[in-house]
Length: 454
Ligand SMILES: Cc1cc2nc3c(=O)[nH]c(=O)nc-3n(C[C@H](O)[C@H](O)[C@H](O)COP(=O)(O)OP(=O)(O)OC[C@H]3O[C@@H](n4cnc5c(N)ncnc54)[C@H](O)[C@@H]3O)c2cc1C
Image 1: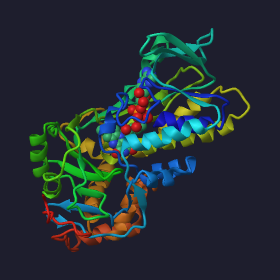
Image 2 (image 1 turned 135 degrees about the vertical axis):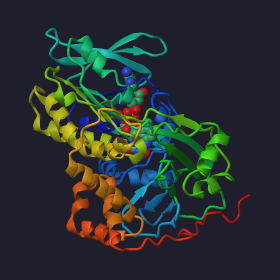
Image 3 (image 1 turned 180 degrees about the horizontal axis):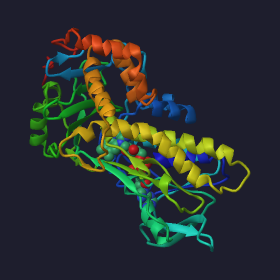
């Protein structure tokens, strides 16, 4: 996704743009090995969707055409906790639900329609080409996957969007440059996903059902309806409490969540896939912005620069934000050599990922099994952390706090907006005697036990 977004904006600045991928990109395949995460639920945040719609104006029609459901946050979702269902809360904030593969296929169809963009699939990049001084990257070395034939691509600018498994640190090291330092935070979060046919006993207009994380066990789950009348269902655990990837164990795990909502809906549903597990969910920030020496003409974007615990669904949206930065910065380098561009881009990207990284790691850093680079939190930050935990409870019942929280988690507003007096006041009021009234049954006809199970 980061590579496609980068290609889209680069086509405004360069005559030729080549997208190289180790997978064959000629077909809209449901699954390809280069993105193992595509078997898992991908929520598209509003920030990402807004950027994509600006860059690909046909996207809303394309999503409609494939039958991707549309939802209003707080209305078309059902949220369950141990005590019951949270009440509906109108927000006016809308987005679509779509599988990762289908979204990627839509974008992938549009990108080569831009003048000068070509795809070179089935080709693995193996290293960087430089000029004779070794100070400027002039292209990449690659190998065709099937024939193992060597290939070279020359370019004024090389953008690595190789994802979590990017080899860019090794490519730099092979040229005599330092590898970037990295910040890693791992709370040992595990996913297990299974796809189901949306059952006929499901009420309409409920594309999302969520069982919030159990405060004790940390287990959570979510059903997301995507195009084609399918459900993608994830179960998640933390602190190495990984959900099993056999069907019996998967259902048992679903039953152990703090609400039986998901279990009750999936146990009668028809599975369309096996259960897939995924554990490579740590937060990894490769600090390309801190390199003291770097070659010109080479930048790193998307997960290759900064990958997040995927629970908060930020990766694709941050990849889109990275591309916006690329575009904005290239405008300042129009008609002049790209000297200094790589450093400027990585510094801007580092500023942009700071907030999503903080959001993604905040809860992970509190987990007992957390490993990696654990910063010492000053007292004030600890108090703010406690405040945010309290605030999350308040979102269950307070429409104003919920709406602002949804805006922050969708990367539309800064987290500091949750410290505004009117929000702080509502959180305090709740704790000073507000009541927490959850409902026995969800709105839109969702009940704990679906009425007409086969
Ligand atoms: C389990 C899971 C769930 C997720 N859920 C969400 C979600 O709900 N919402 C969300 O927004 N994000 C989610 N993400 C994150 C999201 O998948 C990524 O952030 C997003 O795809 C951007 O990644 P990327 O484009 O940088 O890398 P990727 O999407 O991983 O793509 C990397 C590409 O580079 C290619 N490649 C790699 N190395 C080479 C090479 N040497 N030569 C040629 N090609 C190469 C690969 O084939 C692949 O096509 C999730 C991630 C995981 C792991």
